[in-house]
Length: 267
Length: 293
Image 1 (cartoon, rainbow over the protein chains, first blue to last red):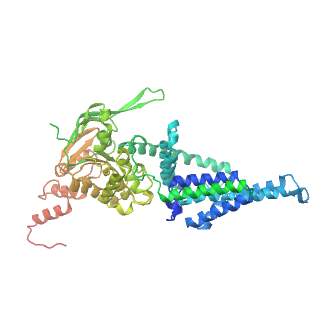
Image 2 (cartoon, rainbow over the protein chains, first blue to last red):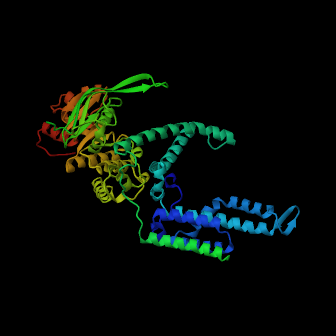
Image 3 (cartoon, chains in turn purple, cyan):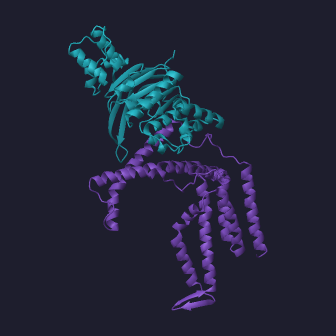
């Protein structure tokens, strides 16, 4: 079961969204998030809903998968909404005991709920349709221009992809060490929070030691296979823009233009 | 005239440990005057129990470690020549013991492509090499899988494919089977043998399983940093008592043959396979009756 955990739950599929260049998806998500913050009118939300709806239906990812992501921030959404509802000053709609609900507060609360859930939906459509590897690849090539100001883009993305590869291995190892210690009477599930935290110390020490040993082995294996940084490296799966990526860029531009147009027309 | 692909002359190597202040704490001598020459296309096995220096020797060939004294020449390049480092690593590929710690990518085919990517091979050629290497070790069907879903033997075969994709002349396998079950061990050794027989790649196999070296052209036995015994598998395995002194045990059937011989049967030295022993025993019985029960 531990082996199935992947970072940013990828939903396998073969839709056009899945096949888009990861750089397009990264930029698209960024653009979408920015428009959410810049344009806040009801009209802008209608447009954003249409855009989101179209992308979700094209991606063939079931909607309940999307909603799963929302569940994680449900509490945050409720709290934000309540705070806005009761604590925004303005024209009072109705009041009971010492709570007052204002018109502005109501509007703000609805606004926040939409903004938060669209933020999550917008970014999870990217993680659900892009494998972690494509994502790091996209980051490396997409942010390649940062190399000019000496940001180690290649190194960072190499680190990210190695981390992704080793997460399940270290998870496995953790449960192995846990079982070994439980067999000798350790108790990870009882007692107060402090006791449980203390029980984790003897777990972390061997885990760290083995992680360092693995890192050492891996570095040697990489060197043995001729790894010497990003210089002079070719790619097995180079990223290149195709027609569908161009179309996606055009759709993106159209979306932004529509949002700006609506802002100007004050819709 | 240089014909050997790997030529080590009188190599010593010391592991130096430093204390917190960077001063020499103590040092251990892992190799004491080892010489080794391997001709292209050979299958060489290096045997030894833990701490005999066999892994240290393996790392010398790939220039991961440099000799303290003596020289190691790989395909005409001295490993001390830093400018030839990447040539050497390309000539002599290396497969390590722990399958998890040498697979870099999270998809099988991408891992095999890692070596060629580092060498700057063009994209199209990388795909050719990946395909060829994965097919050679019988893992082409698993190319899209995550390495975490493979068995230990399969992971090691992927690791071998990863080295093969760099098209080395020589592959060093540093205890590739130590962490595998018997089935996985056979898979890996068979894959290595096939590379040697079919493609003429020089294979240097480091192991402490005696069964794995039967098919080698030459066996070197190491003990405490020295090569103490060398010869064909038959020559080496005929010295049962001596091997025991080096804490190595011969294959079961060789052991049986040895015991029978000691008990007075007229058997030849160094029997390697069950078939051989059966044939010899039949000969002793006069070879007339073919009853086998």
